[in-house]
Image 1: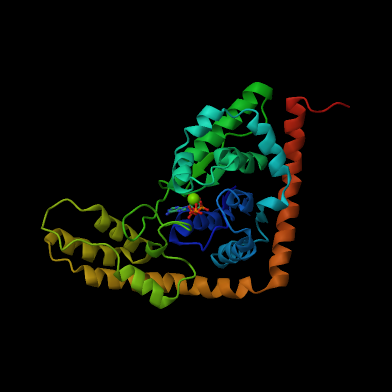
Image 2: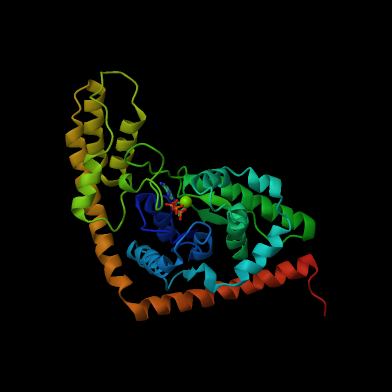
Length: 325
Ligand code: ATP
Ligand code: MG
C-alpha cells in the first residue's frame, strides 16, 4: 500500500522513490495504491486545483506503468472507511508525540498562518491509509521513513490494547535502501511543492529539462583526490538513474583525475533525462484527457479498496468493542 498527494506535478523523486516500486510490486503482490487527496487538504490553499491535480497524478502513475486492472488504484476520499479508522487511531495518538514529528515542525515553519489540526494528525491519517488495507509493505522514499515508524507504532499499540488486527507495516524499496532523489540545486530533495526550479517533473518539456539540468549547481572543477562536494555527488546520483553504468564510470574517472568537464556531464544528464521523461509525459497527457477512462479507473479502484477496507473496519470495531448486537 502506498499513496501520493495530489499537490502538483509528479517528479523524478516520486518515480524512483515510489512509482517504480509500485510497478514492480504489481506482479508479485496484492497492491493498494491511492491518490491522497485528503492529505492534500492540509496544505492546499486553493481546492479548485484539486480536480486537475488528482486527474494528472492518476494519469502520470498509469503512464509510468501502473496497471489499474491489476491493482486497486483509487482516490483516498472515495474510501470513507479511511476516516473511520483515522478516528479510532486518533484515540491512540499522543498530542505530544505528534508535535515532535519533524515533518510537522517543517510544515509549521512553511505555513505559520495555517497550523491546522490536520497537519498535526497527518501521520495518523497516513497510518489509517496503510492499516486500513492491512498492508505489510509500503513502497516510499527515504523522506517517509519516520512516518512509517509511526504507522508501525500505531499497529503495535492497537494490537496490544485491543487484540491482533494489524500486520506491522515496513517501508519498502526493491532490494535497496530507500531512495532520495536530490534537487538539482543541492538544497533538499526534489518535490512537488518546494524546490520547483530544481525539480525535474514528468510533465516538463525537453527544453525545460535541458535548462534546469544545465543550471544545476557544480563547483569550479575538482582538484584530483579532493573529497567530492555534495552537489557533485548529487549529479552523479542523478546520472546513475538514467545513463548506462559505463558512461557514469567515464565521468567518474575524469572526476578522480581532476579532468572532468561539468558542462559535458550535464549535457549527458540532460539528454538522459529527456529520453526518460518524454514518453511518460506524452502518455500521461493522452490519459489525462480521457474522461471516461479515468472515471472507470476511479470507480473500479474504489470498489476494490472499499471491499478490503470494510473487512478491516469490521475487525477493528469488534476488537475495540464497538459491536453491540
Ligand atoms: P509534497 O511536496 O507535496 O509533499 P512530494 O514530492 O514530497 O510532494 P509526496 O506526495 O509527499 O511527494 O510523496 C509521494 C511519494 O514520493 C512518497 O513515497 C515519497 O517518499 C516519495 N518521494 C517524494 N520525493 C522524493 C524524492 N525526492 N526522492 C525519493 N522519493 C521521493
Ligand atoms: Mg512530501
